[in-house]
Image 1 (cartoon, helix red, strand yellow):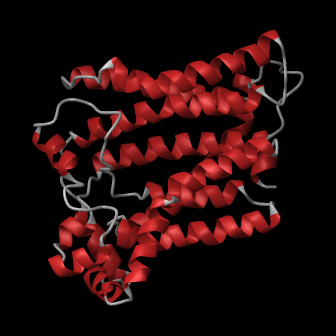
Image 2 (cartoon, helix red, strand yellow):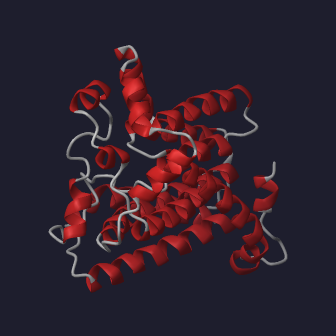
Image 3 (cartoon, helix red, strand yellow):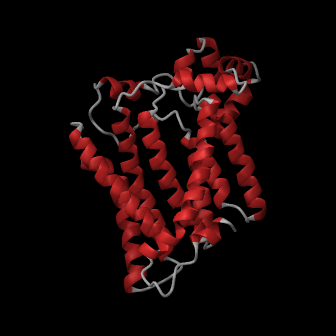
Length: 317
C-alpha cells in the first residue's frame, strides 16, 4: 500500500471514529446494516483483493487500484453521515454574508438567474445534465487511471477527495447556508423554467437537522446539505488536476469540468462565493500535501531505506 493510501486510510479511520462518537453523543440513530450493503460489498471485495495481491501473491499492477477503490468506498458513508451530524449544530446561517460577498464581486444572483431563464430551453436542459454528469465523469476518470496504470494519480485523487471532503464538511457545520435558491426566494416561474438539480424539497433534511426533528442518520437517499464551500466545484477541479499530462483527454476533462463549475450556481443553488471557496480549498490542500510529504514518508513508509516515490514529484509533474 502506498504512503498516500496509508494516510488516506488513517483519515478514514479517524473520520469513522468521529462519526461514532459524535453521533452517539448527539443521540443520533445509525442506519440499519442493510443500508451499508453497497459499502460492505465494495470494501470487502476490493479490500480482500488488495490484501491478497499485496501480502500473499504480490502484484504491483492489481493491488494499488484495489486499495484506492476500497478506501474511497470506505470514506463515502462516514462523510455523508458527518455532514448530517455537523448540520445539526445549528450555527447561525451565513447566507447574507455569502450573498454580500457575491454582490461585492459584482454578481447579482437573482438577476443572473432571471437572465439565464430567458435563454432557450435547451440551454437549461443542457446545464442540468452537465451538472448531473459529475459522478459519471468521476467514474470515467477513475477507470481511465486504473486501466492506464496511473496508480499514483489515482492515489492522489482519493487522497485529495478525502482531505477536501473532510475540510468541506467541517466548514459547512460552522458556516451553514441554506443555498441561494432558498435565500433569494426566486419567482416560481423562473424556478420552473430552470428546473434545477436542486429542486423543491431538496433542503428538507437541512432544516430538519437544524430544528432537531431528524435524528436518524442516512447513507442512502440522502440530500446534499452543503452550500459553502461547493464540493461540486472541488471535484470538478480535482478531476482536471489528476488528468494533467494526458493530452487530448486532459483537454476534454478540462472543458467538461469547467462547464460543470459554470453550471454550479444555476443548478446547484450555489453562491459564486461557494465556487471560489471550493477552488481555494483544493489549492490549499495541494499545498498542504506537498508540505506534509516528507512527514508522511517518515511515518507511513514500510521501508525507510526505500522511500515511496515522492507525492511532491507527482504533484508538480
